[in-house]
Image 1: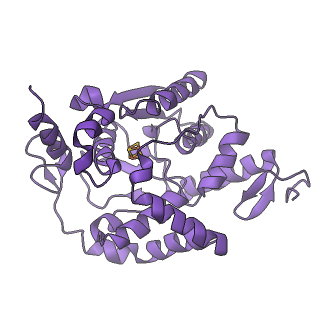
Image 2: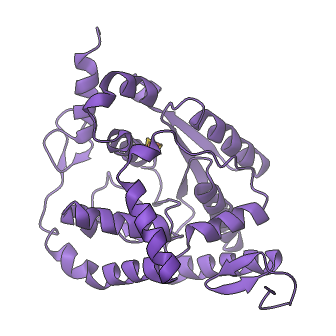
Length: 306
Ligand code: SF4
């Protein structure tokens, strides 16, 4: 395959057009820059990028940083949550710390251990058998910390890509979770609170494999190891299903997202009257009197001797 611009050997396709490495990088960056601009995803210099050291968030930090500097907005701040997953997160944190150091980007690190008193490994060792999947706890705690520590910023950019988002639409439909479904999209959330920082997704229409190629071409320092707990998540069979569908129809995931966006506003109407409360324990925003994070903390505290 030849690059559709210069006739050099193509390294892969972006938006179904083949490109050499130089033009692939240009095409992806230019697409994401236009998306950010058109949707007003980065409105100011107070931007935080949630990073894990994986290919998606490191590529996003690289692109958001370029975009902001082009616009005279300075550089974003990177925020990394350390769940305490040995052999996995320790390696990706080393990678992202190196990237931030090399690119002169401020990196803030927050850990489950410091905040909650346990690592994810410790929690699963004791409570794992009672959980439907490790991600059901890890995801709640990660979102809580992300919101809490990104409060000084106007937006938090996350590296969710087209594959992640299409999977979430299908998962929420299959689980009949319309409230969560209504909160999806390239701007997450419905209700406004001073304690909520808006979450935005510049890679909403970029496929996972396109980001993979971008990260390799850009020589980003990434180890590509996967979380050992990810296999147990319901997301996994949904990912396999969507990948099979995409091998039959290259637009399968995009079709899921376009359909979702076409009904999102009508769906959201049903949830706009819900009120946001403060958790009675931690005073963070919550849809219940006690937030899910405090419930997890209570479960942990019951079995410890402090
Ligand atoms: Fe946490 Fe699940 Fe992500 Fe692993 S895959 S870091 S357990 S949310």
